[in-house]
Length: 278
Image (tube, rainbow, N blue to C red; front, side, top):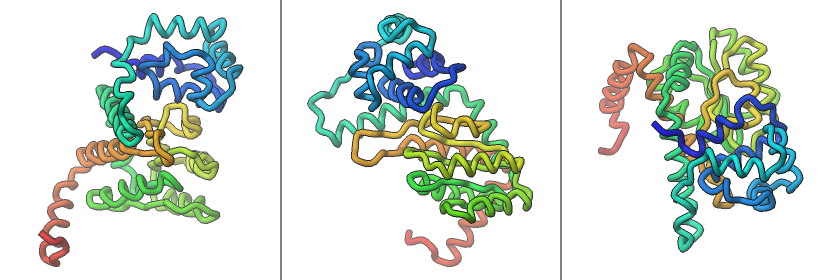
């Protein structure tokens, strides 16, 4: 399968130690992979919300003489995408179009299922399984934990911060947890980074679903699988991270030998109680 423009950009950034500002530029370039080879340094700076000199320093950090050399390289190695068609769409339609692109990029990423399969094995083996998500990511963590509890014997949702968060991580570790799953979405709370650092120090393996491979949580995650968020509306949209969470659930079910039996038991109990309206 031919690498997508986003995948080729990811490969360009791998192995470089980037500052937070540079990670922001890299993230913006991945989101705009199809047209970034044709943006000026000023335009890229506007897209990323940084200064033009920051774009120049970013290009140098990647080993180029300056931004023109980086753009020339991108035009040679990043194939042009379908282009920014749909200029006549309204802002709501554009937001939907952007989410479709995010899902397409996720589909390309999943062509190599190895990271998901590795993560699933780690999640399935952890008893209990703590699932962390604060602020914008709380809904993703809560959704995963709700469904995971139907097949996993002990899922512990960590969706509230504060001084008790590290206590709850420690409690899970003492109870036998070996892995913590984190959903991390912008804006990234400092508390999440601190919590993951604490989890690793306690001996937990950290698996993270984040909006970018360059997110602040990357440095404190053993396994990070990216799924971009949409930024076209006042508040970010997270269709791709949600779908990636369901993919992890599916792969985790395959690692749990009694998952199907647990689901059938739940369905029988729900039917007996008349839990759902048919």
